[in-house]
Length: 102
Image (tube, rainbow, N blue to C red):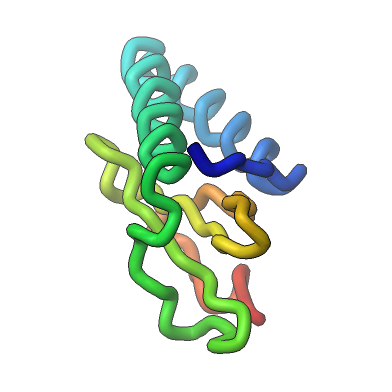
């Protein structure tokens, strides 16, 4: 298993998304938390599985993975140095290019 390192921004994104969902639908928020955890387990097993984000730096490729069952949410990460560095957890309706830059 590949180690995962969560950035502070990833943790903040995850918390904000889960809280937002819990206000509208608490059971959906629990499913979301489980789905993110399942996606992270999958990344730990297959760290290069996500496609490369085409707007990123080709020297340090950023990859992304759709959260299963919540396909509007994307996990952005880098696989480098033998670990998965989790950068952001974002909703696809956001202006990803402006937020992620590079």
